[in-house]
Amino acid sequence: MSTAAETTGGDTEPWEEVTPDAARRLLVAAVEAFAERGYHATTTRDIAGRAGMSPAALYIHYKTKEDLLHRISRIGHDRAVAILRTAARSEGSATERLADAVSSFVRWHAGRRTTARVVQYELDALGPGARDEILALRRQCDAEVRGIIDDGVASGEFDVPDVKGTTLAVLSLCIDVARWFNVNGPRTPDEVGALYADLVLRMVGAEASGATQR
Amino acid sequence: MSTAAETTGGDTEPWEEVTPDAARRLLVAAVEAFAERGYHATTTRDIAGRAGMSPAALYIHYKTKEDLLHRISRIGHDRAVAILRTAARSEGSATERLADAVSSFVRWHAGRRTTARVVQYELDALGPGARDEILALRRQCDAEVRGIIDDGVASGEFDVPDVKGTTLAVLSLCIDVARWFNVNGPRTPDEVGALYADLVLRMVGAEASGATQR
DNA sequence: GCCGCCCCTAAGCGCCCGCTCAGCTTCGGC
DNA sequence: GCCGAAGCTGAGCGGGCGCTTAGGGGCGGC
Image 1: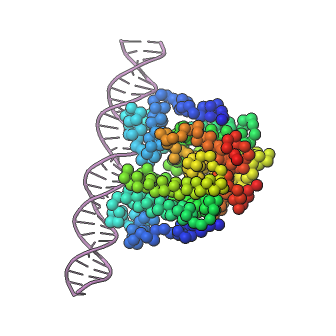
Image 2 (image 1 turned 30 degrees about the horizontal axis):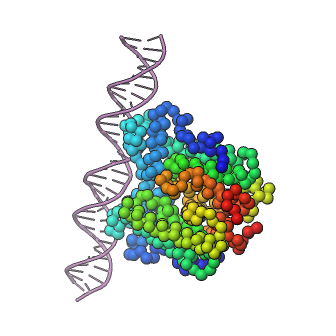
Image 3 (image 1 turned 45 degrees about the horizontal axis):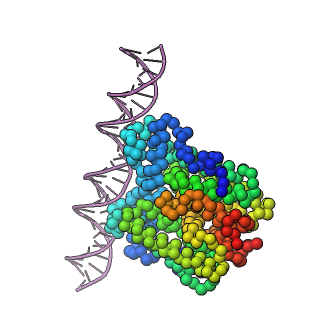
């Protein structure tokens, strides 16, 4: 299927880089709360409570509530870029790399849905400066995917009349997984990743997705 | 391109059914505010201000702020179901009906983006009772699209190994348009609708999308 | 021309928000 | 065994939130 997620640690807890321990516990609590209720509906008391601390403890490790969201968003986007970059720059045909990119990216959105939800849907809650920084990372995501599609068109593997629009649609399809994926639903992140990789190869007109092409 | 949106009024102001006039002005103001900032970040004072009224006026026409969201969500979902149902039950092959459904649905999400954004992304802000009512309408959307795909598979027009998953992906793709579409961007709602109809026909393995199939 | 009804406003209630601060505990260095 | 730094808490601040209430103005019916 692929290895991009494994080599980038995409399916493991990505918060090990956050220290000290109390700061990490607060950040993980914030991710859960933001994902469940949304940034604006989450109170600092709720976050601190989930981390087993008093409300004041939050402000020892983070400047404001928005600062917390900013760090979550930054780390999450770094991970997203890493996943796509690893797939885009690996060995293999454009078809293989696109399938790898989509299945890894989808697997991350499904398997780490709480993080992905905050990362993808709470961007507007950031102030202008922080938002601009994050938007630059999003453009990198776009560029990686577009690069693969460009390669496939150049090599004749793909038939894509509108590369920009198709890139947008592919990313959009993957990102929206964070909205609807249900952990208790019938599909595993791996299964959704495989299904989506097949659908995307059809979208770009690639032959032999490996699975059920007529 | 298609007629589903026109016959259902999908691209016209859909709030004419809301009376009296003051109630409609408040509702339109709420849609704008919720779409811009999100439900929880919007204050009742902001809504009333946009409608040119005092904060108290809101409570003459609506029981609570959540009641406002509920009515918006209800009307919006009714419209969404109507658009898909009209396309699904029109004359024509499964290929034509699927293209019509997707292009109409996408055109609505792009052209009436503020409404669509509230309808699709603020569901969690509703209480359990109201949410259940809305979820039933979502299941109707799903059923209409799945019906078209089932028809296409039965007639041999489509090649779809996973009908349930593909239905999910098609709807997901359309809905996410409300997240990224930019009114000042380079594409019109019509163009996005046409692009997406083509992409979806590729996803289901339909021949001759009318456009650029190899 | 007066009444009753419908809309609407000014004022404000009670609550909970994000955030602060003084002080307590714990712990390594010497 | 004392000291300063670091981590954390209890109490509480100013403010803005959703929502309520008392009352005023305008308009149709008769």
